[in-house]
Length: 126
Image 1 (tube, rainbow, N blue to C red):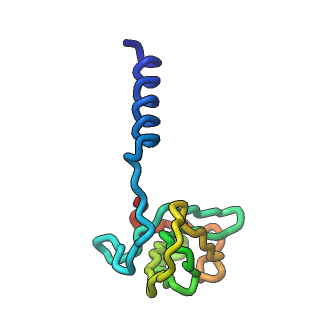
Image 2: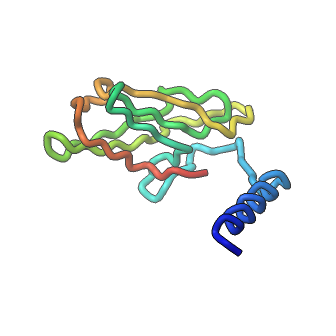
């Protein structure tokens, strides 16, 4: 098999798995859904220097709000910043939201200078 055929077989296998129900998403994420550092596990994160802002995609049961997260910002010199988002209260709703909830903080909200190098410490994944 050539590389193109191998890619097609892998794509077909992944598609079959997804269509057959191999992908399971739990809508019942509890407040203790954290990584080893006790930061909340996220579905995704976007850091935009253009806006400048940070958007997290958080697990949600339908009622997730920004107020349920505490951003923890640490400055390492003038231009280097780490940020971690900690969920401080549970989302007790029962909606099925596998895509999560998008929540955005501006650099100004977080006390981060424009142009700073920003690293988000949360683990990304389901």
